[in-house]
Image 1 (cartoon, rainbow over the protein chains, first blue to last red):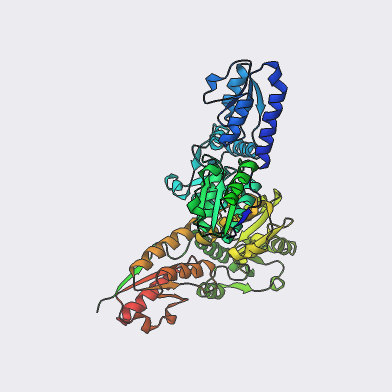
Image 2 (image 1 turned 90 degrees about the vertical axis):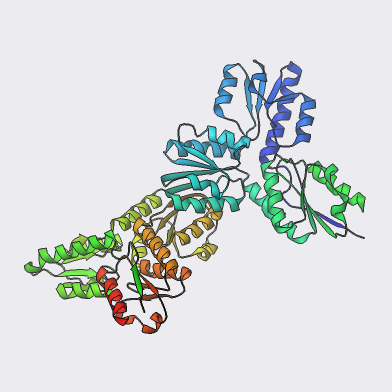
Length: 285
Length: 285
């Protein structure tokens, strides 16, 4: 029995993730021999394996800012961070190395501009995601609301001026539904569609592949927003879609009586993880 | 057999129409005895009966600007007009009396601002409607496109900055669909929702009534955008919806075996026309 395996175009690391990991490596090279401590608050990218590897190389991943020692080096994660936390770290003589994705920084800038211009700010995104926590902290001083889906709009009354920024990894479909809903509420609506292009391209490629295969395997962190959306989008087209973090989670029963497998990975998924999934499936046949 | 008749709330003349007709009457009073000729290009409001009446009182309704005599008085219709035509009339020593609806003037102002600020302008509206012709002539010097429905967007490529103004009598549903579609195309989208409040309120009231009655009669000019939309909206809820210009178009077979009739009228429909429809139906039973 022959099994065909196809890896989706645009799967794996995006520009922002590659850049953040380059910054992490460069920081390690520059400061490791100087006995400086290098910290990161939360995961630098949403991938356990990558974080474990960088941890072995010397980056200390902590959950609380108090755990960061004065005089150390601090890498801002790719999802960005609230500016007041960065200011506090600076005041404690901590050197900041910014690995925030430039597309996320663009969303920060748009949030600041809209809030300064008196818009009621809507941030379309996942309330608990670090990127959204970062964005909303750039909008301080104005009224804002994080909106995950259309039903969240029910509690907002009519507004004169609504400004919109979008978590970079949102699905266009969700943004369209929410913007359509806002048209009912606002007299003037300024939408800054800050979804990053690579997110859309990756989603489109996964959709194309999902139509042609018997099962789709989406590889990447369960806490990665873009990987999770990728799996959701694929599942709508192909119900045999499985979101796994690595090849060890593959189940042989998924592969029973099938002819073609599609694989894609999120923006924070190493190519290696995708190739391991491919190899594992090949070896089973 | 008893028949119930209910007239929808918010049916009949809107603020802009009342204002335009007051301006017409005041102009007649002021200039009639001075032997001045008073002109209007096209219908002052989209209602044949009203135009005929004003015509009898002395206003000359013409189709071409060349037909307007120098030294005369000119009333700008409630739908507004392209500014270059008004300038040409002024240069021919014609006195301009502006009866443009203030909500339409607001759409003009938004179109001018968006075009000055470098937006690709989308005007959501009926391509041939005088209001839209007026709006698009305020956007001169920028790229613009009139969009009637979602499928019109197929020919537009990706844009950095899209500005949106809306014909005041559009349905919110159409605007929502188009704005949702624009979210795919534009990176920044500034929507100036210039639908006037009374349009929405009238549509909502007609919808409520259409749900409760056996037939709905919508009274008003067939060339009136807002009356036509009102009939479309009502028909979606109650298929026994009839759009008539006056009671003479009523057909007795529509009233056969029914218990409740709803009546509404557009923004340019005189209350009298609505009451005549009511009276005609009452007399038939």
